[in-house]
Each structure stands twice: as structure tokens, then as C-alpha cells.
Length: 132
Image (cartoon, rainbow, N blue to C red; front, side):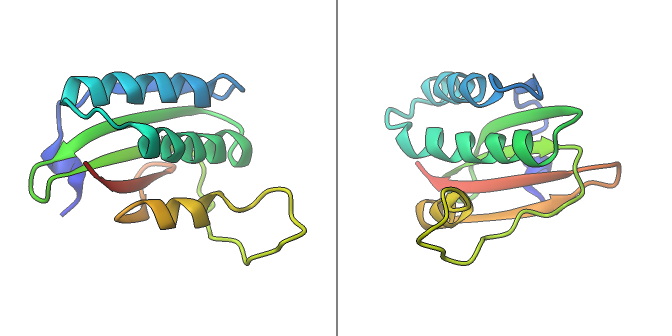
């Protein structure tokens, strides 16, 4: 069962596709962590920045929606980034000469789990589960 079913009234941040989206998402995450009583937001800020940046760079249209909520079943925090793109994100092969393409590899190392859920309507949700 999706984590969405357990967080129906979670506040969401709706962002336009602009270069300001990642910084606004970080500020939103910091506020949500503060509301949840979580002092260390460093990993959360890195993860939300990467996921929102991917939506901004690789989709390029529509809105980006960010949600941050606790999953009381396992004590983790879930970060969700919704966008209207249908292309699935993928971890790129290691390339020491590349100047980009390391973000999802980094996310995978920092979080407990991450994945993608396609929406019935157009788009997808990329989610990450972080230890509090």
C-alpha cells in the first residue's frame, strides 16, 4: 500500500518549473522538519534538492508538487516529488569524467529506500524514505 494513503492531509508545496524550485523546496522541507520536531535536516535538504532539480531539468513543464511527511509505521520520513513527466528516473553508470548524473546514485546511498510510482493521470511520484 502506498504511503499516500497514510498521509491524506499532509501539506504540499506546489512549484512552477523555474530555477527557484529547488531552493523553495528546501525551505519547505526545513519548515516541515521543524514542525515534525526533527533537528537534523541535512540529508532531507540534499534529497529534496536532487529530486526537484531532476523534475525541473528533465520534465520542463507543468507543476512540481512536494510533500514531506512521517510514516508512523516505521518511523521514517517520506519525501515525495510529483511531476507531470512520464520518463522514469534512472541511476546513471559511474563516469568519472561526467559533470552531472550522480544525483540519484547519491540519493540511493543516503536514504533507506527510494522509488517511483506512476500516477493514473499523467505523471509520476519519485519518493524517498529517510531515517529520522
